[in-house]
Length: 327
Image (cartoon, rainbow, N blue to C red; front, side, top):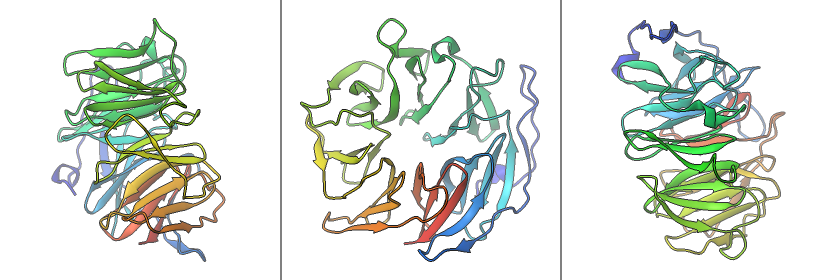
């Protein structure tokens, strides 16, 4: 684990917040196996969000007002960072140099809408016009290769270009409902109920992919994922979509999925793992020849995050728990 988190650090953040308390966490993680091979790693009756790989030995995720660091070998909580209350849909995303995560909703005035985890600790992030975030607040977060965050709320899609925040969609035009932001060949895709918009990294509009004539379904995507072969996968309701760098989406119809696909990740062999809202996990082999369904028979079947970790396990996150299965 990165050295800054092996020490106990207390830092005070101006703006009246006394936050960022790093302390030793209780080992409230455990492992229980069911018949399908899934093991329960961690559970929280409130919510679990933002599961991502912190380093080769550690997972980081969020709960109500904590960032938790879970050791992959012992499945114990190594340490926690105390924050202000995090939004229920909070999730994390790595930039090249730091980790960003969604903070509080605008219904909690004075609390930061974003947090940023760097070598200097956890810091609340304020510098943009929160009036564009409406009543719900930030729902989607993505960080580009320049370590600049892109965010979507109920009233706008915004990006930080290194100097200021730009409103890409919203305010003066029809407010989009954005379900996903992810990498594009020259910048970023934003997936909305109207279609997929393509932007340069400076926030310039490049292209619009309308549903229907470009192969997109008439539903809003939930995640945009780029694999090692430079294929861009669009995860959405009742379908998987993949396309190569070009202007036409190719519908991937072989997976036989009846529920929504919410997330994707790739393992070291090039196999693609997709998490669904009711059909468990779907694994597409690297050559596309084999499709495997892995049932997920737990009370909370809604998989909103999936991660292929270097320990040989695949981890899935539901609204209240983290599970693992051996690859």
